[in-house]
Length: 477
Ligand SMILES: Cc1cc2nc3c(=O)[nH]c(=O)nc-3n(C[C@H](O)[C@H](O)[C@H](O)COP(=O)(O)OP(=O)(O)OC[C@H]3O[C@@H](n4cnc5c(N)ncnc54)[C@H](O)[C@@H]3O)c2cc1C
Image (cartoon, rainbow, N blue to C red):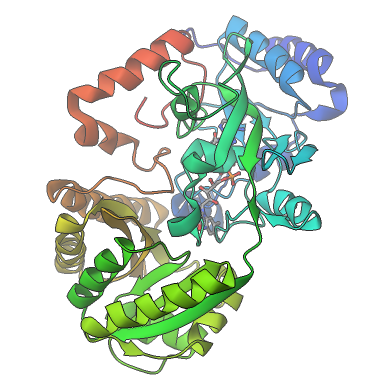
């Protein structure tokens, strides 16, 4: 890419073209806007700002209102070969939305219209900049629900979840964001506006949705999406259990999933049970706490609850009744609020990893051993929160209560712990990430994950974005 200095005369030239595309009031070069769009939920960006340093910033923040305006912005960027970083809610944890190469920051939040709640075909059509909670409210007004309940429901956007392959707490029954989208409107770097197939299941070639889901703004901007909605369940019942160890819990859960799909399945390791679960849910017991929710038509729920109790009893689970599970549900988002969750000045990171059942428990123990042995100042805690018939994900976190005061040393330590943990997951058959994405945080590990399969992603990038303007240095591209 030819580097163009977006300063002085050229900044004014390009700015005037961008103002023509989206309106003067929707372009900003004010410091305050650039700073606000330079820190997302990536610990390193927050730490950097917290220590009084400035993160890399965009040269201009631009907010198009729809696909046509987005197309005009991308045409300008492609012509001048200016980097474009798409920003949804800025709630990403991997530094995906950080404009590390400067250029244009494309904020999607003006694209927040809810165009239809289609109860015949069970979807909501909305702008990709819509905060997910808003589309949940729109579904609720008609008696339906999106069933996508991540802890960042109130701050992250439809486009952000699609771009990072997000997941919510009732995923076992209703699926991940990849399962929840019907059709998308996408703007390519050359300005073309394209649509994926109007039905997500078909035999008309590879699935275009899945090319853009998870592409983290490196291939295109998602401007609109049709997201699935579901009937509200007649009933949602909770049951808490205590397992003596994780092995029994894995066996019980795998067997349960061959019989039916609960909505919530959350297993906490003894370290999280005795810390977070004790503090927030009130379970004052040693062991591994597991919360299960079953929902749907009442008659089916009653049958499923019976199967659940029988299956878990076979593996020695102690039935703790429904109160803890209900408390957990009330707190499912406040778990992450300040005071409940670790926060600066603590150092922390979530290395969510996924693998089949024959590997997942070993991955957990090996990661815990590697992190705690190599970094004695770090605690390692985990829960297992998204389950499938074939395997599950481990949401493993490290916490350093007293990280180095020097920001450069803090960065070094943070990256070293990450590399150690994720490489251990890889060495034991795990995937570098389950649902937070790659961003700049894990870009260096993508080649280690994929080897020569990486050329497929590189080929797509080269074809769709020959000038390399879209979110440079993310996703290992
Ligand atoms: C407290 C908290 C709890 C969280 N819990 C969860 C959870 O339970 N489940 C979960 O999955 N995640 C969770 N996250 C992470 C975060 O919400 C997700 O990664 C989410 O996908 C980010 O969406 P965003 O709109 O904030 O995106 P941003 O952070 O703004 O951007 C994320 C990435 O997506 C790209 N992008 C954004 N919009 C578009 C678009 N329209 N087109 C193309 N690319 C785009 C950006 O360029 C960037 O690479 C949590 C975050 C926080 C702060």
